Amino acid sequence: EAQVTQNPRYLITVTGKKLTVTCSQNMNHEYMSWYRQDPGLGLRQIYYSMNVEVTDKGDVPEGYKVSRKEKRNFPLILESPSPNQTSLYFCASSLYSQGVRAEAFFGQGTRLTVV
Amino acid sequence: SQQGEEDPQALSIQEGENATMNCSYKTSINNLQWYRQNSGRGLVHLILIRSNEREKHSGRLRVTLDTSKKSSSLLITASRAADTASYFCATAVYSGNTPLVFGKGTRLSVIA
Image (cartoon, rainbow over all chains, first blue to last red; front, side, top):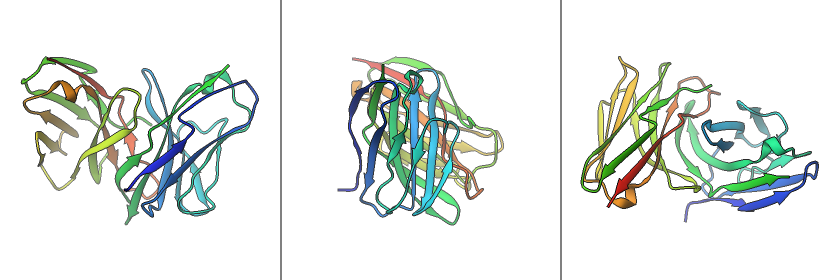
């Protein structure tokens, strides 16, 4: 089954404690991205990757890191989480052909609370 | 970099009625996509319409695109309680590195 898998689904952590949210897709998609969703602000892109070893900043990259060492995995790293990073996070992947984004497949989300 | 803006922000209808949501965007696009999100869950792709298409159907969904007005609409016919969700439009532009940009969504409530 084609899917994007995120882990964990729920996470409560303390300020400053490094954490990683994993994301894996089994569709051989070139393009992967991370979004955060906050009430009233919609979905905002954090980082994206157009292929292995190619990553770039989205609209709200501050406080986050990513890596793309393999095509299927795109972890999101919070080196020193702060309460303003409390949010619902989504990983997504899509085909990227001729400079155009096809439909995106989303993971189930990670609800992160930083206290 | 908000591109799409959905209208209305919230919509409440009776089961069996049709629901129409609109999306406006600012720049030229290659395609426009509609997604659905059940509360707190991941977004699910519904339909993609290319810039050279004017209308597309999928089951009870009908999407129109007017590139001259930079707008799209999503019509859900004969709505069901299970259609209760948030609906987002997303635009894909021609520029290579530009991401898929989502609007803030329309919250649809279908009352049984």
